[in-house]
Image 1 (cartoon, rainbow, N blue to C red):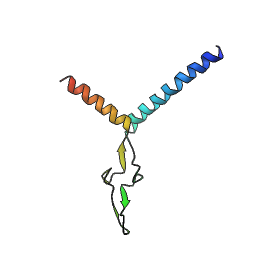
Image 2: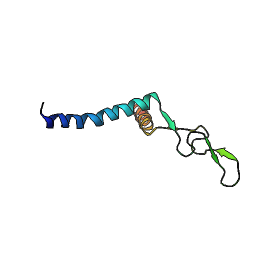
Image 3: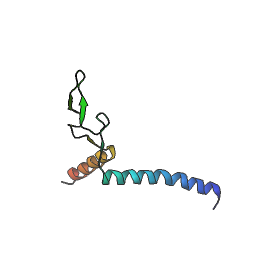
Image 4: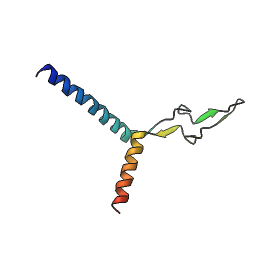
Amino acid sequence: MPTDTLLTSVAIMIPILLTLRYAYLCYARPFREHGRCRGTGRIPYLFGRGWRFCPHCNGTGLRLRIGRRMWNRTRRLYRDGNR
């Protein structure tokens, strides 16, 4: 196999494998750690020593992945279109 063909096939396969890996990750673990509260579900008050629930994740510390959100939207559009 010539070198340029091998490099081209590797350059094509790497993004495909990364996409499949992310799709599996969205299937297996649809939620990821929320960035603002770092997965704890709490953020400190601006003044004082107390904590409050993170308003963005509602105190769960989890956030739906973008890929999973897109998959849910696509499924919903398909389901609503076939009614």
